[in-house]
Length: 327
Ligand code: F6P
Image (cartoon, rainbow, N blue to C red; front, side):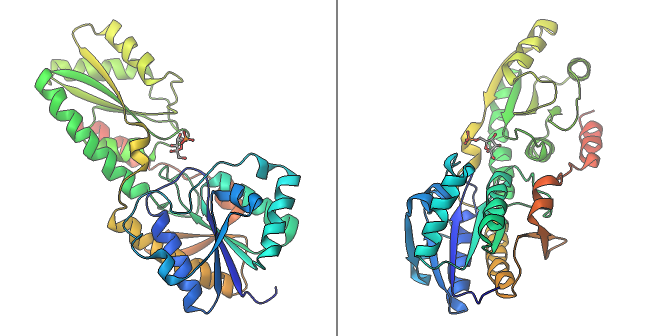
């Protein structure tokens, strides 16, 4: 592998709190090691269209505390084509970029892997997605912040639910992963939690809500992940329950994209900082095609293809804990 003098960095896919802190860490670690750093704006689209800027340590002042990504992000269809990737590589050549750091989720890593194979460009991934659905790290950037955001939102819903004796169905993000639903559900004392990984079934939900009512609970909260396994959306589930348990006054709240915004938690800022440093130092060791991650508070590396294909499993103990505590 040829010596690395210039690093490119981009954010891609859904943004996540902590991405800015990771950009800062990449830019400053590159400068620390006397490397040039070129930022690519708007994800892979910016690589295709050559929307770039040379970064110095001062370019990333005052962003560690900001949500979103200063580099902007996109899900880029053109990069899925060979022609798109060819154009992107022309930008790489033009700026003499020797290695690329991609901050994003599994879709972004799939693009990075194909690009690396086609053009033999060293790449390192930093996992950034609120969904925490990437194998090879116990935490992705933004996940901890999203959990806190969701918990705070449900706490507020609880206030009004309890004042009006209502049953609330709260939809949280997670097309394919129930990490947010499960953890924020337990953290906010939800009655039931529906997730994509396990079909809890609507009958079980009805039984549980009947039990709650009988045991004297006057209000309840059910947390539902976007992609939950029943295959029904939050409104369909709510009206099913309303029909079967008419004594409940039902309301639905979809938290939506507010879950992706906001200042990153301290945990996410520290994680992003560690991952950024480790990403650059891994590249400097001559390694490529890897994702940095954290396990038991240690930085680890995982092959990009494993990070994409491997499943980040939910912790089934959490289901049991939730079941016990909603008695
Ligand atoms: O990948 C993170 C995520 O927030 C998912 O949980 C959600 O389904 C999706 O992004 C929403 O994507 P978009 O912002 O493109 O609507």
